[in-house]
Length: 440
Ligand SMILES: *Cc1c(COP(=O)(O)O)cnc(C)c1O
Image (cartoon, rainbow, N blue to C red; front, side, top):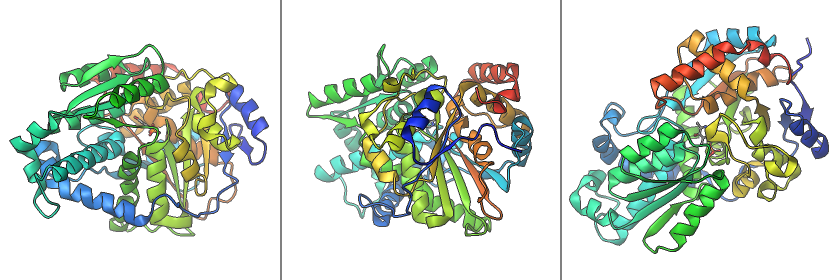
């Protein structure tokens, strides 16, 4: 049976833009893929990031009791979800070849989203730099010392500023405040009220903007430039965030090794990553490419109204084009993905190895949110379901390998208050799962 959702594009950006404007489910296969990884970062950079996180593990274990069991290492489980695979097949009418797995970043400790990887890494990197400069520690000492008064006093004279649609602010706010920094978070209009409230409870200063994410980031950047003791976490350009995300790749390989799962030519790995500005999925994809080489195929997934990375990649214009330029609204319930202009550095970095990119509709997100809750009893926020459309869109492709593993990257949800999660599920239940069949 022909997969009606499936629209592939290689050469024509004009045809692609037309389909984006019609809000089709788009699947774009990257014609520029040649598996050359990156000139900007190397395996050593990612290994250094892992080492830094290991140095901080004793401190993190003490600061966040939930990390005790894992000895201060912030990582999430990877789980097979066979019942959801059946649900997806039934709802979409598509045959999904191979196994369906979930990377459960919604269970990441401390901040409950993929932002726990990049955000926490960037803050500890900055804290380490300040502590080394001020002679409070050497790299050979035990970093448990970071919970001491001298460190908190030092950090309290510095500010950390960040612009966010929500989850990055949460991650930076929670860790920054715990270490002793004063944290200011510029939130975009689409940020959820409960995320703002939680941040205020953690002691962060929340500044709300009527405009979208791009403006919130610009405001944060401007404010930081005026203050010599202020550090700006730059979601668009940050190399630290990127490297923090990238550590996921080597770790996933070790997790698969432990479970006896080999990724190779016969059993290739297809990974579907929800994409906002691109740093999270870009960093993870980079790490996966380092770990699995040409046997991993990473796809970004964005809401149809916010398909900024796809637009930047397909036109080659990267951050010189926004979704508003082609008449899309950047309005979506997937608040973590409500970004209208992609990171330029990430787009250029992933271009040589990314397998492709696709779009999803808000109603499909809610239908799948309900499906995952019913079949596997797993609760995610709408953004975190984006990857789930990937295996459906790819099902029309011929050469997926003999026994493909589809890995959907679940990026957030465990901090959503119960009554809001209940509303999400209800909304998904009220929608017909038929939205996974037609191409609206
Ligand atoms: C931030 C976020 C993403 C995407 O990360 P970007 O770095 O913005 O591309 C995906 N899912 C959730 C839940 C997020 O909060």
